[in-house]
Amino acid sequence: MWIFMIVFWSIIILLFILVEIFTTGIWSGMTSLVAIPSLFISIFTKSNEWWMILIQVLLFIILWIILYYGLYKILKNKIKYGQKLEQMIGIDFQKKYILQKESKEIIFSNEDYGLIIINGKKFRTISYEKQGIIQKNTEVFIKEIKGNIFYIERV
Image 1 (cartoon, rainbow, N blue to C red):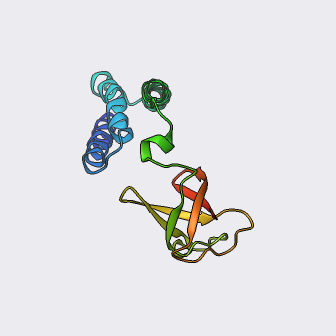
Image 2 (spheres, rainbow, N blue to C red; image 1 turned 120 degrees about the horizontal axis):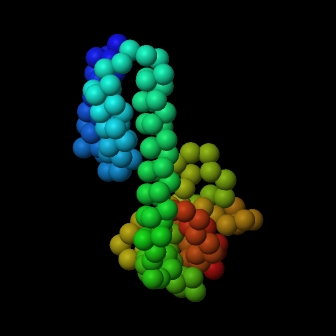
């Protein structure tokens, strides 16, 4: 049974290293690092006891939670922008923009989003409350930004 656990933790480590290589996030790499202590326990104890397997799994879960929340807190405090999102993108809420694609107030699919181009960058739009459908080539103001969606209204 202890050989099974060595193989199990080795597969977990290799699997998450491969996932880390092919993705842009850091969480799968973190998961492979957290599995290393459990692998060492399985190598050096050579025990078939059920409680040893439980210790390995609990250690893995506890270390993952500690590392996840610890790393999240560190990254959250480190990544602070010195300017607002609008300044980073170059948006002026007082400026008029030309709508490039019809924008709707109610979205059922990706095709229902409008399109606006600011400084060569494309942004999705939704018509602001009680604006209904805003036709292409209409002058609009940006009323609000939520996530990656610009809420617009007619001039």
